[in-house]
Image (tube, rainbow, N blue to C red; front, side):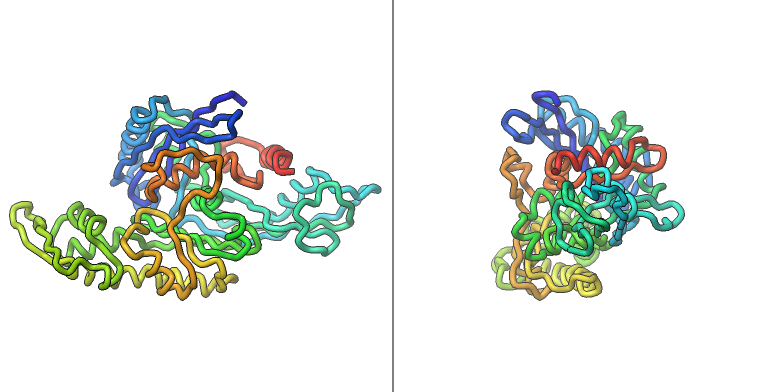
Amino acid sequence: MAKSEILTGLDIGSGKVTCVIAARDEEANKVRVLGGASADCKGLKTGMAINIEETARSIGVAVEAAEKRSGQVASDVLLGIRGPHLYSLEGHGRINIARTDQEITAEDVSNVIENGKAFSLDHGMEILHVVPQKFSLDRLQGVPNPIGMQGDLLEVRTHMVLGSTPVISNLMKALSTAGFKAAENPIYTLLALGELVVSEEEKALGPLLMDIGGQTTPLGIYFEGSLHFSKELTIGGDSISKDIAHGLGTTAGWARELKEKYGVCYTSLLDKEKRITIMKADRRTKAEIGTKDLLTFIQPRLEEIFEMAFEAVQKSPYPDLSGGVILSGGGALLKGMPEAAAELLELQQSHLAYPVHDMLDCPPEYLAQPYLGAVALTCYPYLRPWSTDLPGPGRGGSFLKNIWRQLADLF
């Protein structure tokens, strides 16, 4: 590996594209963020490309601005995706060790993980990630590293992320149209984010990672040290902005600015004396409102977002979240959001996401919630504790080779 390697993280949001350019300093074992930028994208809807040319244009705008701020030319892209076309399930693999010495090798580990994905995929779906959760040897569970041990039966539990092949192909085509190529297969942004902002102690307790975007809210539940459940909610912060726009008769841009600048989650946080002059949708008529008027639009949608999250958690196999909730994404920035999340999700603790690894060297402006997904993508190749990401059809690569390489790094 080169002494300094340029990394480009491109987070395809639900209606926005965010790019971060970083450099990997191998000697210092650091990923240094050099610059970043974002661009709104009308070609995206809930993280899926509905207009390839428009999506490509927004990718170009975001990357070009990030290049100017970083002083670097973007390299092959670590492409982060999300959206309701993604879903997860748990897998189980098992193999018998027939050799005389019965010593478990790295190849055995890769084979048992491969065995875990031996099921019938729905048409048009592909496996993006296979995340080993825990191994067992001769039914002894909780074996962290079976390589070198002896046994007859090797088993593994995995968390698999699946996505729509057409949706992924359209995003890859938009990236190519913009003049870029992916460094590897698309990455589920929630996975990368979790590796950056969820500590090992939190993973052991069992937290919920909740990434509140514009039109989607990905959820990830950690249990016994690894990701065990993920789900995409088709609701986000834009629903609050739309309610403000409709209720006040103003533009979407004004509504979003009002929400971000004056929005709060509780009456007690209001500046009750504050009056705000707004521009109506005709862009000529002005009106004056109080901050309490904003709260009447914010609270119902906020409750809806957390009610949907609460229902998803309760229906999952892991309804008890001793680790509380970790909030990320631009939609998590409303004043009082951590307190509201803890109350509405009925949890004891809640906090905004922040990096927990010393390897990241990042200016404060790019530690802001809207940038964390793209920052996490630049760190992902060096933080992921597994090596089992899968190539999609026609995108090249070798599954077993990927597993073998990453298992060698892990063990």
